[in-house]
Length: 266
Image (cartoon, rainbow, N blue to C red; front, side):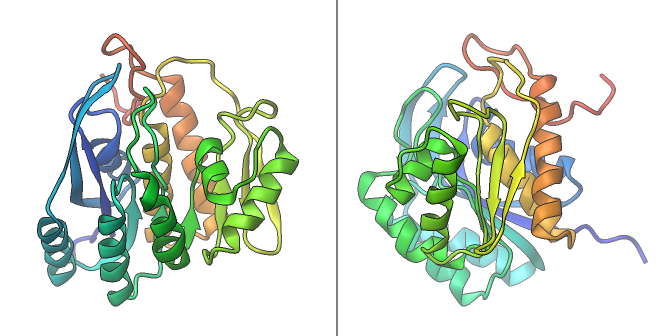
């Protein structure tokens, strides 16, 4: 019998520049050994310098994509990214709740690297109320963790307080990514409600980091789908993203993308 790949669904916005969003998710999932499926929530006109337009897809189209996946595929894990509005957040949460998804990675995408809002202000509360309680893991960066927790984060002790506040929203694990920490850069903090794991890493000073958050969350989802425990999945994803950044691509005139397939011969 042929080996069957684990199948992972990403629900997120598209990036016409190919470095972040659904495009990055599919690359990262594929690179980490699973079959990638997608439900697009919004279309962005985007490159390495800026986001110029965002068009949110009708709710019925978002719902139809998710339903089509669950009607046919054996979904081993789900990752969410850009959900744009409260209505989309609530729809996605309802659909995933009805499917009893146990391996859900929530990347609470709020703002692009160029500063464009990707989550409407009223949708932050919807994420906290409806989506985070379903999550096995939430993966905010420092900015997103501050928004979700109300805690200003400048150091690891601050990140610990924020992680506790986010965990109290109902998720089973939270990892606060330390790429933007004023101190301890590239140090991530994983919390399971009882214990903290401080995951130190190499900080690579590169401008080519477009899509790292999407890539990290997708890599975690891939390893969770392959039956790895949360800590192992996070460590594997961190190692993968580090190398993808190290091999970052000088493509475009802004923040270039990471190289999702750095391990392939060119």
